[in-house]
Image (cartoon, rainbow, N blue to C red; front, side, top):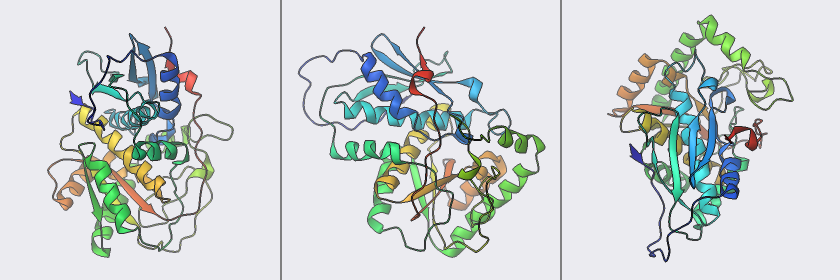
Length: 330
């Protein structure tokens, strides 16, 4: 089990907190469903049980071809868990909890119980405000560099969740990561079933899940992007983006969920700073590419996501299912 890192103030609790109520669940789920997921499958569910909020995976929304091990589901559910924690902290009811508290219940991602009541910190409120604004930007980034202060915030955000982040700097290093990513992308594209699965999750508007064609483009830049059938992007080279590789100390299910929390905190930190980001999972999906990336970085723990970060024009968020549709009521 992995305990959920929490931000605490050094004030003693004056009374035992009461359990979470329906309004707490509603606030947590409204934020949680804004988390990213592979092909926007939204593989999560939530339940109020005995005053605790359960975050649960939805195996019916696991991608059988792209995600046979459930890695992407756990990353997505970890990101949703991170948003839920922020929402609860924003209500002055921060959560204590444990990731995967029941080894016999594989769908139970985490159980959250109220910690000592306290006001939300300014940092928590800033990240919570970024939740509805965060989205993946697959368009080109400008040549404007990411400020050093923002890079430091990104590193701190990931470390606070018990994970690691490498910022890839310099043309040779970025090119090496890009070559691994493109090689993995070519491997995946050769699989007819893989391409068919992407097509199945390409949704015309209006839709509440999947990816609309206009939200993605072809692999025209230094890092590959999945082709969901949108318009071709210009083939002119993109200025070298900031590439970040996020990883965890180990590769257990609990560590992958923790990496999902770290990923979401990174993305919200980027959004709060006015920057844009998109995730590149192809080098994680192909085991040989993932190992090659780990060795290239000189890391013991496995990479869990590659992220490109930079300045870009504002874009639209992808659709989400209504919060009430992912709450278990029975």
